[in-house]
Structures are given as structure tokens and as C-alpha cells.
Image 1 (tube, rainbow, N blue to C red):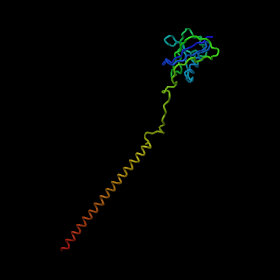
Image 2 (tube, rainbow, N blue to C red):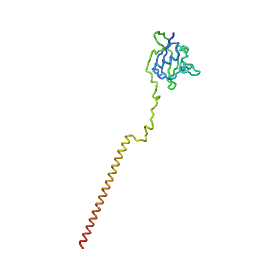
Image 3 (tube, rainbow, N blue to C red):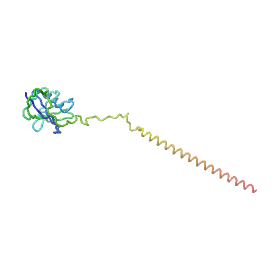
Image 4 (cartoon, helix red, strand yellow):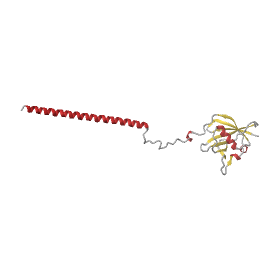
Length: 206
């Protein structure tokens, strides 16, 4: 039985790739599963294989999930689409994130009776994280929990301290004005007394 060895490379990073061995009688869904496993993705999204020419231009599509008028991976054996010693496919995982892999047949290797196929025969480079930062939803702040119009505890402390300073200044000012009024009254009384005594002294001369 023929064993195909494919090189599966991240489209945007040729330094990260996997070499996958798969039986000619196994299907493209088996191929899909081993690719996802080899790069550590979650295998929870749709995927497609496309036949390709030497310039990686997409041709016929094989879908993971059934769609009317489209061929399915689990109904197509690998050998049926091998027409070239260096047959190429484009594999796309998760239409939303659009992870794209370039798949090229390297050679046909002998069957190992002790091996379980499909399998990852070689792994080079660390695969990128499946979920990008932009895929993570930003935390939502509840308006009731955070209201810009409401003062924070630090603002309240500052406001209370400021109020106390103003109260002390007003009290000091009032006390100062009352002291000045009392002094003025006392000075007035002393002047009246002096005038009164001066008048009485004039009476004694008569």
C-alpha cells in the first residue's frame, strides 16, 4: 500500500512546517484531522482543501462540512486527487481566521506495519497561537459600576479636606471682624468718656 509523505507549511511562515504521512486509501478528513492535531489547533471549525497548480492557485474544493453541490472530505480518498509526483493542495482552516497551509507531496515511502496512519513524521518550528489577540473580546464596563460623574473615594477625601479648610478660613475671618468691632466700640466708649469728663471739668470752673 502506498504511503504519501506531504509537507504542510504555514502560508505566512515557511520556517514552520510539518511532514505528514498518510495512506493512499485514507480520505481527506483523515488528512484534515492529523494536520490540526500536529499544529495544536482546536478542530472546532470548518475547513477546506483546494487542488492547486504550481503557483498555489486554488482549484476544486473539498469541504469538511456538507454543502450542497460541494464534494466532502470524508467521501474522497487521497489517491483520487494525486495526479503529479509533487501534487499540491491549499488547505484552509476556520474561514473567519483564514489559517492557510501550503500542502505539497514530497514522496511515496514504504509502509511501516508497526506505524499508525496518518501520522506526523516530522515537526519543525513552533506553530503560532490559534487565537489572535484581536479575537478576544474586550471587557465591557457596566455604566452602573463605573460612572464618571460620581466622585471616587480619593476625590471625596480631597473635597472633604478642601471644605474643612474653607470652613476654618471663614471662622477665622468672622472672629477677626468681631474682634475689630469690639475694639472699635471700646475706643468709642473711651472717647465719649473723655469728652464727658472734659465737659464736667469745664462745669467746675463755673
